[in-house]
Image (cartoon, rainbow, N blue to C red):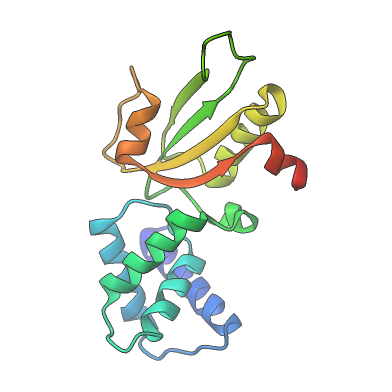
Length: 183
């Protein structure tokens, strides 16, 4: 699929998401272009059509119509609450790399507080794929797992420490054995 076709499909999916919320917007294609350009220049995180629809709803609900503020508020909400994992297959990784941090992988040696593992994952995988990796870590090792979206120019696969993901990435989701038992 060519880039123009992907953008057209993306805009159609945004329109569908807005229609599901009872909104019809005449200048939608231009608004989507503006939002995607702003996200590309300022943020790094996977963006789905549903995300753009949420940003548009945030933008329209404000008295002062500033897209960058609407995106910032949306971004803060995503950082605080994470993604709705039921839409994980819709979130592709074309706009970010992934970092996975797994804590408490092994029984704790006396005097140790945590045993961790870190994995850099490129942009080829979707969030759904990364969540499958997390499920394996949780199921097999009872690990606590955090997933970060990392900027596309972050390509440090050697010698990565878990703190680095927290410094340069955006937390997408945290999962533990307890949360998996609930689901």
